[in-house]
Length: 157
Image (cartoon, rainbow, N blue to C red; front, side, top):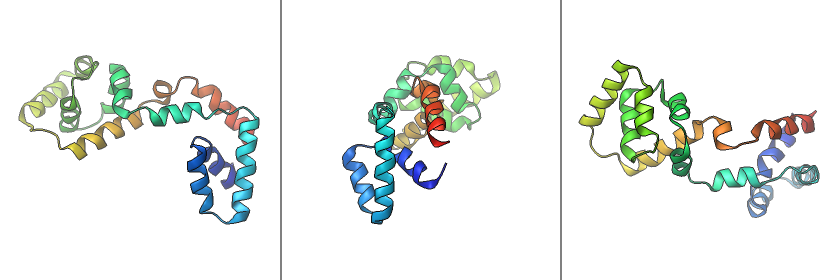
């Protein structure tokens, strides 16, 4: 995929106002090319809704709706202290099930870290929530992503 098409694909998920702000920073020739690709994406029926909805959905909400298995896929290889911090942020609906998925020794290290830690700093909490939510499998965050990805690949050929 050429650079302009990659940029157009990234811009397409933004609001029109945000697209205009980004485009205003580019040379006029690039603006024209990107506007053409954006129009083509719209004409082909690429909806902005999934990207906008995913961006508008708070990361904590994504995590509250995530399964224990999806969270485990993200956190399985992380240090016990980080998992303990994540679990301490709030009473996640899948928190107990997530902890149960860890092997016994790792689960014990996580529990010990939970007992030893103090409150999580707000900036650390926000970053941790955003990073974990961002690493969730795309299928959990955006149903129908396979069809959309196939459509993008067809468009770029």
